[in-house]
Image (cartoon, rainbow, N blue to C red; front, side, top):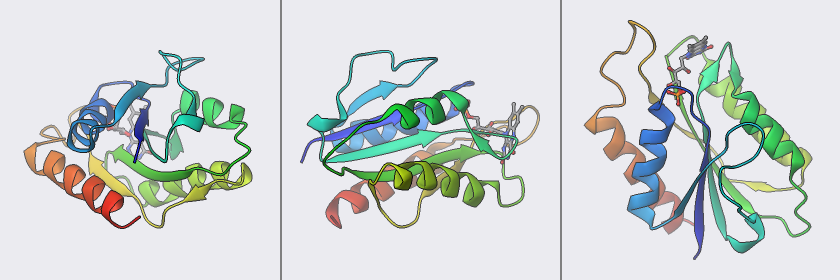
Amino acid sequence: MKTLVLYSTKTGNTQKIAQAIASETNSELVRVANPEPTSDVNLVDYDLIFVGTGIRAGNPFPEMVSYLKTLDLHEPKTFAIFLTWGGAGKTNQIVSGKVRAILKEKNQNILDGFFSSYGKWDMRRTNHPNNEDINAAKIWAQNTINNI
Ligand SMILES: Cc1cc2nc3c(=O)[nH]c(=O)nc-3n(C[C@H](O)[C@H](O)[C@H](O)COP(=O)(O)O)c2cc1C
């Protein structure tokens, strides 16, 4: 199975989780920055796409939203959502729902649930993502692949 990790990051937390998932699953790793991914990537080439973002004010990062909205995949692909967040309210659930809604609109398959890790946020959550978070991400990614 060919897998891709697609992520957006502003302060590096999501990048740490994305790198852990990619190394655990032998996936290619592509950062989505404004306005385009930093490398040329064609989602058609992959069986499973891990898609990750941090959260700002209850929203996924706009560069990821813009990118996902440009997708034009005629054959549905399978996506698994991961997030890093500061632990504010239920914004992880809200944001995974928003990412899911964009992909649904594009007629894609999205696996149930999502993975979220705390990420450092100013003086809050200063020690995240830590080794435990990284390990949890790896286990989630491996289970995700095993369950397909
Ligand atoms: C301006 C701003 C707004 C944020 N809003 C939220 C939020 O609504 N909910 C939350 O849980 N975390 C929030 N965070 C924390 C980030 O989502 C968290 O630090 C995340 O790990 C950042 O990902 P990155 O390091 O990959 O950019 C916010 C952080 C900043 C700087």
